[in-house]
Length: 171
Image 1 (cartoon, rainbow, N blue to C red):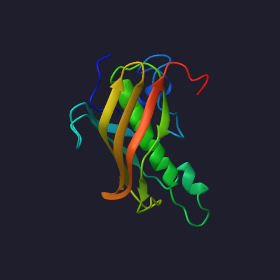
Image 2: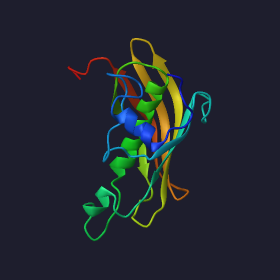
Image 3: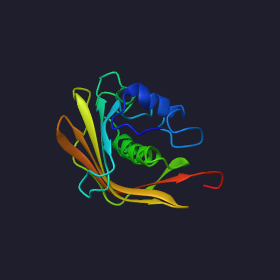
Image 4: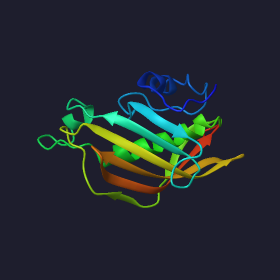
């Protein structure tokens, strides 16, 4: 597979079914847990560290599943879903590099929330800056990320860590 530099929603669905990077390799979750509609840019030399960058987007619609239950009468996207989207993208990056294995979030450094996503918002933008990748027997990426809604940064997370594992039996 020749890596692309952008991916449509249909491409992301292929990834969720295990069709993009091959069986047993990195997958995105399927809807409803797929937290992006497209990857508009992925590269191995950009970002603030010059080691890779991903920019992805999610279109906000008032009928998104989480607004119906979090919270009744006060709908807001759970912050953990934005954080999960950042981990999803870091794992996608490892698969995009051609690494084998299934992705697992391994942690994060400091996470800050300074805003919210409500049903009247239009678009979330996720921005990942790869700090380091290890592509040996241990396959790991460390990255900083941010979540913006309608152009305003509302979450940041540093030292997001995702690994790829050929066996998750004892994870």
